[in-house]
Length: 448
Image (tube, rainbow, N blue to C red; front, side, top):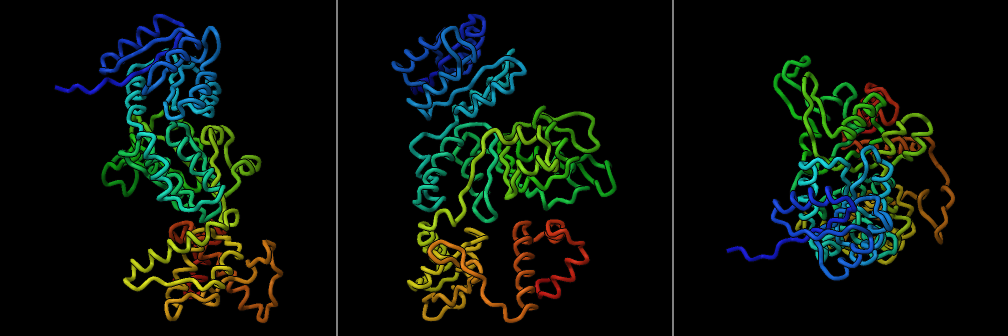
């Protein structure tokens, strides 16, 4: 016989009919419920009992649901809180998510949506395992990284859309994966998509799927990325690269929580959490009318900034040691060591490509070094990005202009290829080149 204690839910609402509806529904889910009519009663119950979830109305006789969210954030930050708001009160719901609410429901409460929300909240990992798992994957003890871990820990317990900003190579996709893996959707799919790597004519089909015969080449039904991420998380990398026509369709899918495949007649309900990222300034893209303002507000409920490597130089040694250990394991060779001058050179480098560039620099040096010791010259760092006492050094004398320009061209093309996962068409678009011109340059530089 199962004697495990039932999970406890706190219901806070001054309307008897709503309380009764929630109590009956949750009781049928084998959950134990406690009810409070106002903020004071809720705070008193929170002091006496341990709860697994709190459902609260926004408007209470002696305060607001936001006050209750803030109260719980201070005293029991790992207790998920879901806000119940009036229909159409999107701004109120967003304010609740920013304050730390797990998710929100709108009145009249739809019971399938309520059961889905409650089940999701009760799947949250225990508080003890969160920070440890994040520390293992996100290396560095600098203050910016400690702050980033705290924010990931908090955002993993929410269903709010998150806009992850940061420079190329800083680890935005890793941050998105950690938010997913530490949350209630961890057992469901994490689907990353590079928005800049999908040809514009195929975008709608890729995102929403298509029916057989809907266009030339559609030889069978194919689900889209939204359907693939159902129940889990859809990570839109380089979301600023979406054309305006696709932004309209994406906005509707997020608002309606439903998609219609190309050639389909009916919409399919999808349950996905949206995380997005870009190395561009999304607010500036809105000002330049290259990104829709309404979509921006939907995606940027909470912004999470990933620090550049320049902002956490104290982490460079730990990151370098980790990379060298991994390289030794992958190659089966003894682990290489960094000469003190090489480490100093790394700490004085600006790293425009951030952690990704650090990994590439060390992988090359690991191959070139002798006697398993990486010297400063093995790193082959660009002198124009080296710093002295934290300031940018003057560019070195250019002996051969053609060679210098070719090295700059090579670096920009390689960066574009890396950012688009070596999709040549997308890389050409990013550099405003025709595909023919891109192909010529790749051949000229020996990169084809």
